[in-house]
Length: 122
Image 1 (tube, rainbow, N blue to C red):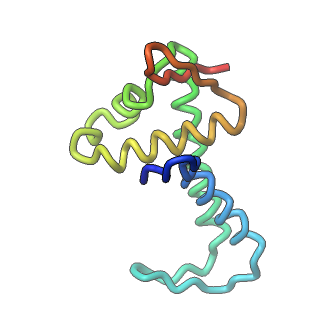
Image 2 (image 1 turned 90 degrees about the horizontal axis):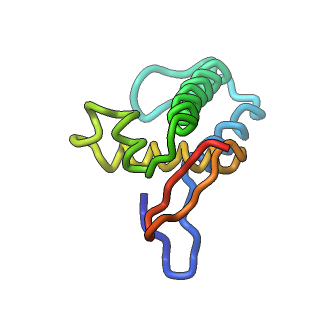
């Protein structure tokens, strides 16, 4: 995550990533040559796998927020109890991305208390 320039909105990278994957689904691709790993010959399956993984994580977050309102950091600790200290940037980035997805879908809302943003299920 990178802070936006003054007066600009923060980039919502997970939403952008999902939009890119949706565009790829519409392309008649036979083979993808990744920078590492094996050739990808069934990109539809791989993309659907990615979507399912993201949906599962979003559902987990939604159910946590149904129990009580939380900050992004508290959610991060719940989602990644072992990893968050070692990879805080990565885990916070994923957490904020999932919050963006849920906010855009209207499944959660945000509110401020004493200058701190809290999220809750709608």
